[in-house]
Length: 260
Image (cartoon, rainbow, N blue to C red; front, side, top):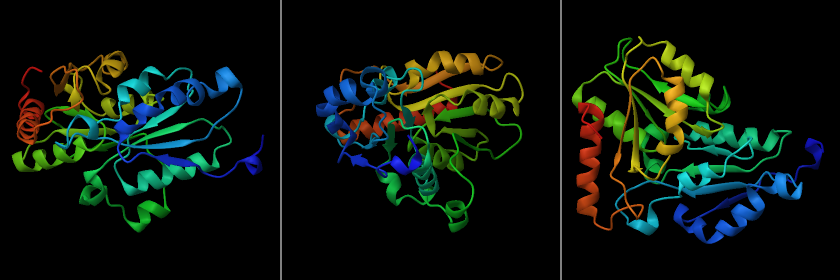
C-alpha cells in the first residue's frame, strides 16, 4: 500500500487510561495482533491518560505493564510523552509513516498545565521525535535517574529543591526499547555512576519488571537499582493522604539512595 491509501490519523482517547480495560478483548484480539492474526495493518492511536495523582484505583493507571506484555517483533509502539513538541512530532511521524502499526500513547494528566511540558515554537517547528531526553546539570552527576512520564517533573522539582546533581533521563519511548540511544547517554558518564529506575507505579506494575533485563544489559558498567511503590493488588490507594505520603517516600528513596 502507499501513503496515498492511508485513511488519515485516527485517535481514540480514553477519559482515563483505566477505562481501556473494558476494551481489552478488542485490544488483544484485533489491535496488537492485527497484522499477525488478520494480515490487516492498523495505524490506530490510543491516547490513555496515565499517572498517580491521588484520584484512586480507577483513575490512575493505563496499565503500561499490560501493554508491554503484548509487545513482540515491533508489533506496536508504546510512548510516554512529556512535552507538547514530543506529542506533535510523534503524531506527525505516525501520520506520515509508510509502515502502519498501532501507537499507544500514555498521556499525562497534570502535566497538561505544567510549565515543564510546554514547548517553544522552534521546538515544534524544528527537529523531530526523541526516543529519550536527558536532562543533565553537571558532567559528573551523583547518579542517573531513569524514568517515564510525569514523574520526571517531580524528580526535576525535587532536584532543584535539594540542589543536587542527578542526571534525569526520560524514556519517551518504551517499545521498541531505545537501547542504542540509552547506551550512548550512559557512555557519556563515568563507569560506576549509579543508575536508578524510578516509577510512581507499584513494583509489580508499571514498566520496571519488563525493563529490568533491558536495563541490566545496557547499564552493565553501572550499578542498577529501582525505586517504586510497594507491590499492590490495586494500581493506587484510595486515600489522598496515603498517596502524598507514598510520593514523599518515593522522592526520598530516589535522591537519598535508600533501598527500594
